[in-house]
Image (cartoon, rainbow, N blue to C red):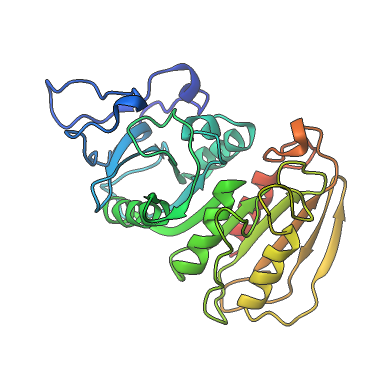
Length: 317
């Protein structure tokens, strides 16, 4: 189905840009000049590859995202595919996040198992290389609405069966909110080195009691940017709060078991609902050596592969 280059190509080669028609000017990538009125929603590709695409929200706000269609993707066949939405951290861009160590590991999984991966960009505008922050304020920018509209669009255009959402840091905060407001839309969630709420974004209201969305949580014990115990100038909630919130929201009332591995410990619930198994997994990474201990844990920076943990947990559902 064509030669699909590794995800490292995002950092070294031009992405395929969808254009409305021949002869139109290239998009203006200068954020100081604002959005360009003639750019709207790109046609979703149907052939394997990496794409930088535009998306226009219902309110007219112009957004951008990256899309990876795996080598085995075939829109003419009867097969369906998993779709994974990954939300970058605050101060990152979609391209930054897509080229990081943890997401290169995700790319390996996507190649091996023909998974579709989407990297939405937080900043309004056309360029997925511009950094941004996920916020929850419809007056300023409706990021939860963008995520939901983009998912609706992609599910309508691509052959998708199961959908997952994962996020890092501030992107994980958005995943918590999407999980509590878009109940039933995701087969599984993940939030890594993240937080359930803070003074800036607030704390999501829990989903309806008994919601059984499986969620994978991983936090570094010595994170100095998003402290494990909460606090700092942003007023982050403790990592334990996220676990406690989902444990209660899922109507879980069974004792969790703690497992120790070389560089991490994790609590796994014994709760199962229907086809869901071990619906909450809470990992504490003990030995992170990365800067400020605030990175997506990988074997290179902590000895623990959070991506593998996330995928294995999702695959168990």
